[in-house]
Amino acid sequence: MGQEVRSTAFTREERQAYRAKMEQNLDVFERMLEESRFDFTRPQMGLEIELNLVDAQGMPALINTAVLGDFGDDEFQSEVGQYNIEMNVPPRPMAGDQPRRLERWLSGELHRAADVARPHGARVVAIGIVPTVQPDIFHGEWVSDGLRYAGLNQSILHERGEDGMELDIEGPSGERVATVFDSIGPLSACTSIQLHQQVTPQDFPAYWNAASAISGIQIAMAANSPYLFGRQLWAETRIPLFTQMTDTRSPQLKFQGVRPRAYFGRAWITSIFDLIEENVRCFPALFHEVTDEDPVAVIRDGGVPELGELRLHNGTVWRWNRPIYENARGVPHLRVENRVLPAGPTPVDMVANACLYYGLLEKLSSSGRPVWTKMPFEHALRNFDDGARRGIDATLYWPGVGRLPATELVSEHLLSLADEGLAGLGLRREVREAYLDIIAKRCERRTNGASWQVAATERFEAAGHDRASALQQMFGLYIEHMEDNVPVHDWPLPEVEPVTVPRPEVTTGA
Image 1 (cartoon, rainbow, N blue to C red):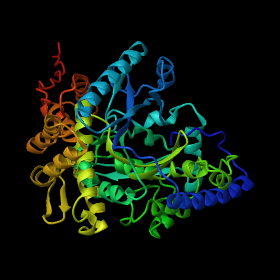
Image 2 (image 1 turned 135 degrees about the vertical axis):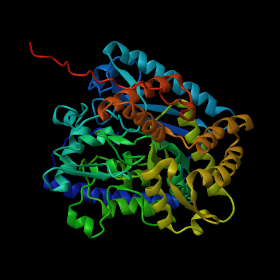
Image 3 (image 1 turned 180 degrees about the vertical axis):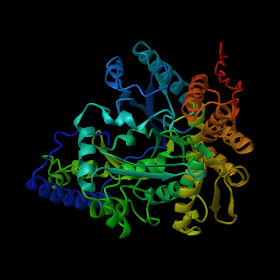
């Protein structure tokens, strides 16, 4: 939802015109898939990373307008909440030693962001959910400047047709958050990293299917969001939180099986058109801005249409693996946008996560019998759910081996496939080994961002801290380790002195 809008209120005539124009866009897009030459040169690695601003106490700092005003470029932009910013990473080829270059670039940009935020009394943090965030922050002015964010809030509430947004998440431990909000504010607590893969129309189904097949594996290895509002919930709580805060369905529509807007999917696909058409047919538009473009005339005259209505609507259907169409300098291109990963913990961890993804994606989409022909889609969906619930402790299904602990599945069966895929992309052996070894060490030590947060918090609680204090102490250590760029599997757990409670004075009578 990075596209700005001009209005948040629309007449009936504007809504009707938008629907008609979107149908026309869909027809033109179908024609383009049959006739146009889509841009594709070599595999490119593209990333977007959402970040958080926190104050000296580790609480969300609602100051992104002031901080962004001090940047001299467009690499950092606003996100939904005033404590969110987004970093856009320029695309780069996935070959040679590019992952190492990417890690250095990410480290440098995070340090630059920290330098800009510091005079404002803030720090920049890469994490799935800030563990200290509390519901009362959303009672005030939490939303970022810009009509797109206010409009998104207004449109989701309007489509929902209820008195507020219900949030109900229970973790495997039995802890639960169950409350109602009068805005989509908690959505801003979700900060992620999005991985992009440019593909041809012919290759898109294979890449999307492969991305869906490995999404549960990604989350299990990289979960980094175990706490929300002081409760320990899913290992990747960001998944159900985002799903519920973008859900425009009434209870009755949920019962009927209507799709949520944050959507994993229902079946393997044979064309990108399957996804784009489903978006148009099944999801009501949240915005109704009609452009002046006549896409039929543009095609007739040999041009490339923007398809603005279709792209705007596509940006408000949050598939965990989303199809992207863009007109890049007069040339159409398609991408698979993988949205399942949380931000953090460190640049080196995020690059390792990207290497696992791109390696498996390349291997599974380009060789042998496709994995999705051997795996019911329901198994991929169950993996996605189990990986989000239990993270590094999940048990996942894979064709040929059945259900295995995620750590065993990855270390014994999938890391070698990822290595072959990265080799096929042209990455140097020492680079492949360095980043995939980080994933191997996570499996060996059963440690990722979520498990470290829980273990560290439990150390503070065992020493006598209450949950709020334990989370604050843990988060302070998390930020220090993140800034040192040490892989999370090497983070030590804190040695905590027991909290001493002063005994009340005993007075004796005179």
